[in-house]
Image (cartoon, rainbow, N blue to C red):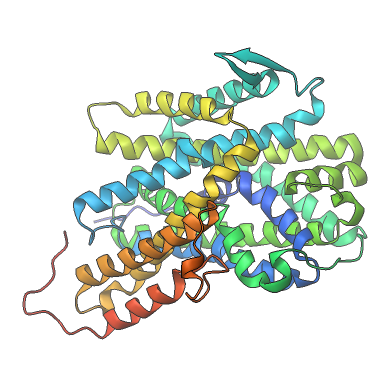
Length: 443
C-alpha cells in the first residue's frame, strides 16, 4: 500500500502555518515590555519566557502527536470535556482571539486614524467607533477565511506567512545593527525574581493552551492531505513544531533586545506595543510604521483564523447538529463583540484565569509524554492534574487580588508558582506506584 508523503514545500508550509498561528497578539507586545523592565536581568527573564512561550508549545505539539490527538484520553469524560471547553473558550472567544484584533488596532491601525479615540454611546455604553469598525472588518475577514479550512495550509502557510517572516526578519536585523541605548536597571519583580517572572510572562502568550488546539488542527489537516498513518502524522507534526518554535524563539529574542535597549523610547510606555511603535517610528519613520502595521496585522489575522477554525471544529464535533460554518459565524461575531471591551481590560481579566488554568495545561502536556512509564496511568494523570488545578486556583486567586497570605509558607507562592513543587512531587510519587490488581483502563 502506497503511503502519502508531504513534499518539502508542504512540510515547510505546515511549519510556517503553525508559526503564524502561534505568532499573534501577545507574542509581539509582551517581549519588548519584559525586556525593558528586566534590564540587566534580561537573560534570566528571557530564558524563563522562552520556557513557557516556546519550549512548552513545542512540547505540547509533540504530546498531541504522541497521543494521536487524544491527549485527554485518561481523564473522566466529563472532566476531559470540561477542560477542553475551558481551554477552547479561553484561547478563543473569551480572550485570545478578541485580543488579536485589539493589538492589530492599537499598533497597526491607530497611528493612521484621525480621532482614533472618538466614542459613541451604544446601549448606554461608550464605544470607540474606530475600534468598533476595525474589529467588525477584522473578524469579517477572519470569518471568510475560516469558512474554508481545507485551504488553510495554502492560504496561510504558503502565502501570508512568508510575507510575515520577511518583515519580522527585517525588524530583527535592525535591532542587531542599529545602535540602541544602554541597558537599564531591572525594575519590579524582575529585580528579585527575573526567572519566575519571565516564566509567568510567557503564560500571557497562551501558546501552551494553543498548542493543544493547533496540534489537533494540524493532525486534521494532515488527514485531509492523505496522511492517515499515526507515525507519519507524528513525524510531520514534530517537524512543523520545530519550524514554528525556531521562528518564535528568533522573534522573541530580538524583541527582548529591542525592549532592553529602547532607552528613552520606552519612557512612559504602559505596554510593549508602545515601545515597538516608538522604536519603529524613530528609526524608520512613516515607512517603518507601515511595515510594523503590516507585520502586526498579518500576525494577528493569521492567529485569529487559526483560533476561530480550531474552536469551530471542536464545538462542531461536540455538537454535530450545528454545522461548522454556523460556529465560524457565531465565534466571529462573539469575538468582535468581546474585542470592544478594550485591550487593557481584557488583559487584566485574563491574567487570573491564565494563572489558574496554565498549571493544568503544562502538567497535562508533560505528563502525556511520560504516561507510558506509569504503572497506573489513569490514576496518575487524574491525581497530578487535580493537584495542579488545586494549587493553580490558589495562584489565580492571589493574582485576582484575594488575600492569600495564609498560604505564604508554600514554596514559590510569592512568585505565583505554588503549583510547581506539589505537582512535581506527586508526579514523582506516581512513577513509583505499584501496578494495581485491576489494570487501569482508558476512560
